[in-house]
Image 1 (cartoon, rainbow, N blue to C red):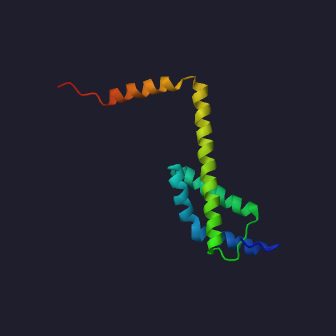
Image 2: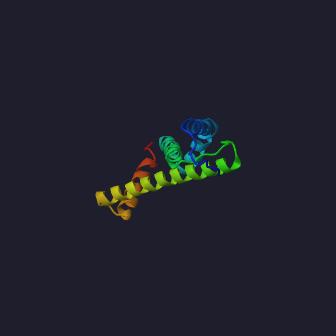
Image 3: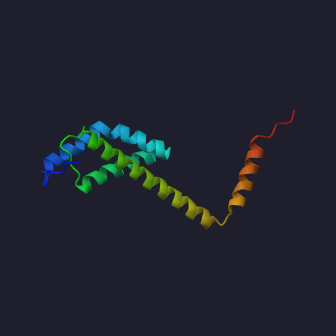
Length: 121
């Protein structure tokens, strides 16, 4: 990674724009492979670009291998953060609804039995 001591605002904006043009679709695809949810994958891409802007990261060549590796790392971390946040939210909801895992299993088995029952002839 190459950082200039104080890249001017125009250089930083140009860098972010170049990264967006080069990597936005690839970042979305990487996030989607982790999250399996298009809205959350878009959120992960947005979070990753915010991290890039706030972090002061600057590469002279946005197409360089070092820049690609850095961006892949940032998008993976962003997607994993969203995945973990979603998992925690689900755990809280499960805790608050007062049902045990066995209750949920029984309910899903009943639902499955209902869905796959045969119709009377």
